[in-house]
Image (cartoon, rainbow, N blue to C red; front, side, top):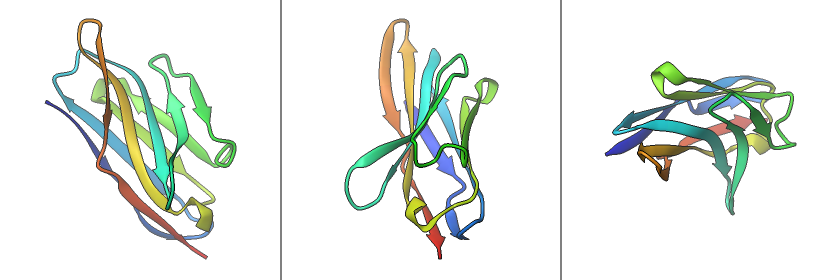
Length: 119
């Protein structure tokens, strides 16, 4: 059984910062890539992704404000969010592409954490 547990959401004023964490636990052979998505009313959009080697990709709307990082020893991914804007308000979801057995890869999602940015 694999779980992704997120923490760090909350209410912050525009211009403030938050740090999200997502820890993967359970029967994990290895972790390929990890990512953060967000969902306001509507579809779920990619915010940032980090590969097993540390390469990163960001949505244009968060470049230069958000930083994704990971601690492989702790199976944890982080999202440091600075200069937050009201349009960043959404439920943020952690996603991980995991190898649960040799050559058996699956995608798992966290439960979501609410981020609310007030103007």
